[in-house]
Amino acid sequence: MGHRPKLRRRLRIRRRTLLRILVVVAALALALAFGRTRAAPDLTVPIGEIFSEAASFAEERGVFRAYDGEGRLLGWAASGSESGYGGPMLLVAGIDTLGRIAGVKVVEQRETPIFWRMARAPEYLKAVVGVPYDEIEYDYVEVIGVTGATISTGAVIASIRESVAEVAGAAFDVSLPLPTRPFEFGLLEITILVLFFAGIAAQRVSGPLRGRIRWVCQIAGLLIIGFWKDSPITLAKIAAMLSGFFPDPRTSLALYLLIAGFVVTSVVWGRNVYCLYACPFGAAQRCVGLIGGKSLKLPAWSVRLMGHLRNLIVFAAIFMAFLTLQPALSSYEPFAALFSLHGSTLQWLLLFIVLVVSLVISEPWCNFFCPMRSVEIVLQDIRRAARRTPRARPHD
Amino acid sequence: MTETKRRFTLPDVAALVFVILVDAVILGVLLQNFFVGGR
Image 1 (cartoon, each protein chain N blue to C red):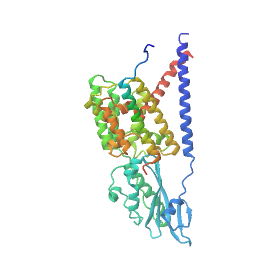
Image 2 (spheres, rainbow over the protein chains, first blue to last red):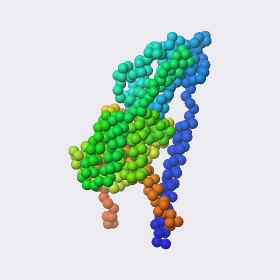
Image 3 (spheres, each protein chain N blue to C red):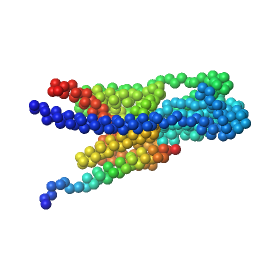
Image 4 (cartoon, rainbow over the protein chains, first blue to last red):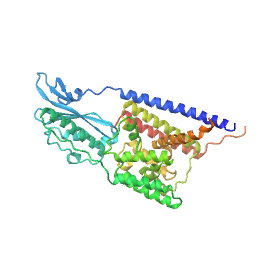
């Protein structure tokens, strides 16, 4: 009997939590269903832009022929699609009857606005116009000198290659080899693995040694995951996966390792090793905090308020990402501003405020605004639910 | 009437300004993403 009020209270909380979860999941599922039902794009529109004199089109096995008003063949076009930062990218390349690139159009892309601007796709696409289809330089750096936004530029290039190869095969009976994409496993991936193992190992030691391990890990994360590769986990990457857009594991192995580490350590160990040991932005704030001494504590009501607002913002961002099927648009973190020096005025302002406040408040982004904190809370709830259920059973 | 409620102190005002400022900027970034899209 002594258990009854406690059990009832626990049940009530559970019922309310369950209701909240149902509402959130239903809303997100509806948004995703809506986003997914949109019709596939009509490729004759971009092809008509490439061949401006085209009056009619004929399609056979994915390759379009464009004809002018008198029925003369103007050229061929085909689409190519490759996973970018926020989901698949769709391009159409047109080749004229002399075998030169007549034009390339981006039909769909889901990149973060900042990364898309960094990728400078329009510039590259303009540079390949007029080039014979078998002489295209598939190298951004060679053509326009871009080095950033590697995933986006890689996707642009792979999509063009695919569409050009398709046209070459159908129109000129030439088989252009598509490059095989090997697994990228380098210093970044090794660092991530080492940081996670060090973070897990650090849970077994106590005192100053654990603190020292954390500092070493965080500095490594700051330099390698942050400044060198700019690849921390972002809401956009989570939203992309939730939308069903899984990036190519051969080129995005680091992302899979980070997310797996985040989820596994949160659910299995109950300690989210990513945020404590690997996240470069957390490390940046801690470094700034060293200068200021971070002595201020915010009133409890404001901490609660910020938690609620953060959850609300994360929900709204994912909702909009699903509705528009543009997951990259949900990204609001100021990471790219710090690590790639790219950002809109508002992102720079956000970075400035967070770093200045880090002087007096301990890791304000992590504690109050980071969307990954909301994800962590969901994972902790799952862990708690999984652990509580068997214990509650004897009282049923 | 005796004063039972806690007064709104300077740290409360500072916290409120901080909350409003950062959340407004975050909302601004999101709205900019969705409506301008950087394109």
